[in-house]
Amino acid sequence: MRPIFLAIVILPCSLLSPGAAYATSWDEQAMTCLVAFNKPTEANEKSLVGCADAFGTSARLERVNARDRKSVEQGLRWLYENGTDVNSAIARESLLRLDVKLPARAPRGVEPAATAAQPLDDRRRYDPPEARTADRDAADKVVKDGIALNKKKKWKEGAMVLAGSLDKDPRSEAALYNLACAEANLSDKHADATRHLGNLADLGTETATARLIKARTDPDFDAIRDESDFKRVTGAVRVQVVNTIGGPGEQAVENIEKLLVKLDQRKPDTKDDDGTPLDHPQIQFKPHAKAQTGLLADLMNHPKVELQPMAADSTSKYDVIVRWGAKVTVDADGKKKADSIGPEVVDEQVAAARRKQNKVLAQPEQAINKVNKVVDTPGRTYTEAENMGKRATSTVDKAKGAADKVKGLADKINKL
Image 1 (cartoon, rainbow, N blue to C red):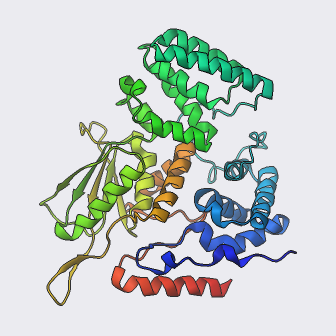
Image 2: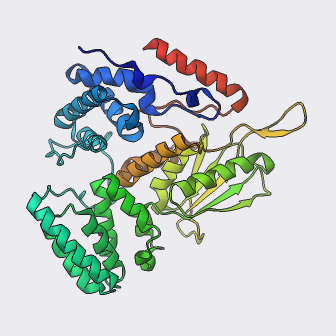
Image 3: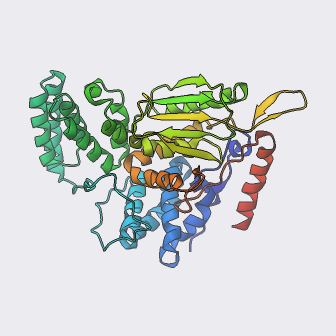
């Protein structure tokens, strides 16, 4: 077996400072995952799918050399061909990060209920076959004609032309997006607009998710922007952040606001709460915002996050309300300090958050299932899932925690 390069797991300086809350999942597992990917037939499938999910969610490609990319692709291809239907789909999504595009594998039987993701609705996932090169080229020309009609606000004609381009290339991201633009401006086609945005999400490519994020602010979707289905598909949420602990919570509220803006969400409304201080964050949410709630809970940088569904008849103008709380201590000088300052907003962590957001847009079922599990659990405490690439939970004591993190990461490496 060829040697495994250690460069992929050398810890950057940022991971040794209080500014880094945790190492990403792939960084933590790279060495063991590369061993598994090199000999997938000898590895446990559960371990392989955990590695596949970690790579697809958090691997920084610029730090993965050519040899290791080859190993990753080898392992992912094996999982795609030989894993369960669900695990094959995960491998296929992760291969997209290596620009390896494969069609959905034909189903090989019913998945066990414990592992199959529950669909958002009864529709089938949109995954048409790749078009021939000639058909793609022809579709591209037709899309341009449809876009020209949209620009002239000839929405009905534009929709007809763009629908025709999908007949030639049903995977055309430009056709799906611009067809949805046209349909959003036709009063009897709003449901079709959301459906085509959903088809775009199902494709799961970086370009597709970028278009979904663009839709959040594209004026062509003004007519359906407040519809719950539009928000569900595009991940657009209107958020309020409530500070329950006063001064010690100001940094956390600022960090949450920065993170949301960097995730291309509308700048949240913020306010202070004079009620009972919370010692942990609490997130209230509407049903259509469930996937984004899971994303936010995962990024709160706090080991205990309570999730509360809003009442079915809620008239709140917000899709998500984050009530920030943390334990407050008083130091020797009488200064109050919170044991958590909320999400990490350094560039490296924001980049990881954006990758995670893209995955949630492409595969919302996983995030929704996790939220459902938390809500149905007594105590309603959000924790990381047991599989799919665990990562270390951040310690929230910034003064003492930095040393603990360094020691913990060193211990993990020594055990490999």
